[in-house]
Amino acid sequence: MPVRIRRKPFKACRKCRLLVSREAEVCPYCGSRDFTEDWEGMVIVIDPGRSEIAKILEIKKPGRYALRVR
View 1: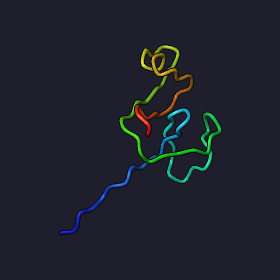
View 2: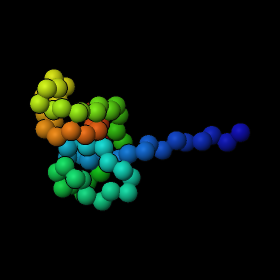
View 3: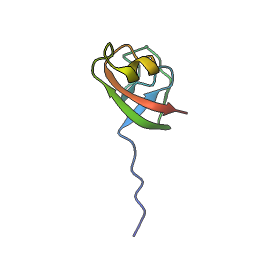
View 4: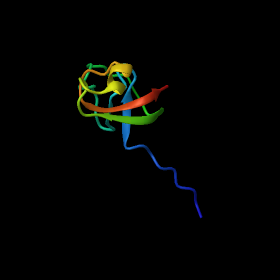
């Protein structure tokens, strides 16, 4: 049986760590065009003003973010 490599459904902005669709060309959060598929972990922030994790990660807008970007 051939080994199937599963691709991640998102790519991460290297500047702000926002996870975006693989088709995105510009990050809607920071405007960067520098993306990577080499990321780990995910956090979804709904209310950055009340989230301790958002404060630690310095996230100001709701969204889906990578915890580690290489």
